[in-house]
Structures are given as C-alpha cells and as structure tokens.
Length: 120
Image (cartoon, rainbow, N blue to C red):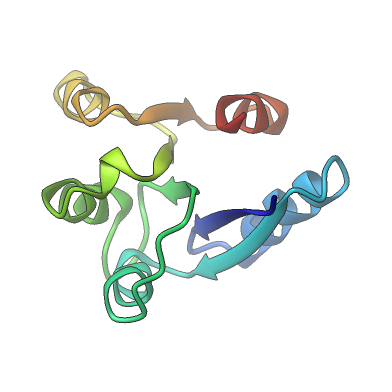
C-alpha cells in the first residue's frame, strides 16, 4: 500500500534530495510538496489532503513550520499524521511544545535514513 508523504520546505534542493533519497530506497511513498507553511496549509485544508507522514522545515518564509504545526495540532491532525520537523536550532521552550504534539525533531544536518526509520 502506498503511503502519502508531504514535504514542506522552502529549499527546492532539499525537497528534491529528500524525495530522491527515499525513492532510491523504497517505492512505498507518493510525494506531495509545498514551499512554505501557507502553501501547505492550503493543500491540507482547502484540498483536504491528509498525508500519512509529513516533513516540516521550521524556518520558512511566509509561514514557518512551527506556525503551521500549531494550526495542524489545533485542527486535530497531529493525531492522524506522523510528523517530523527539521530545525537548525531550537529553544528549550519550543522543543517542549513540539514534543507535546508528539512530533519528532530532527536537528539539521540530520541523517535521512533516521527520518525514514522514524516513518516506519
């Protein structure tokens, strides 16, 4: 069964790298991408797209990953989507908030195999 993976990152190169890395190891995923939190929010709520897994970049223009994560949590989707958020650095307060949503934090740079293992 194909699983839906939503990649939300402002870096086109990183989105492509995530996708390429995962596709080279498994054909279990169908991919969807967004360049920022606002674009992802529209896809989630206007198109009613509910992925199985989601990778969020924390720092993006327009709307960052943390702001989107709060919206996703408020709408009850953190119970339906297995989420991971990537960040270069994160404060203790934000870390506690993210972990309270049952979301895994991957500090950049991180090993993509660890991310795949988290989604299994």
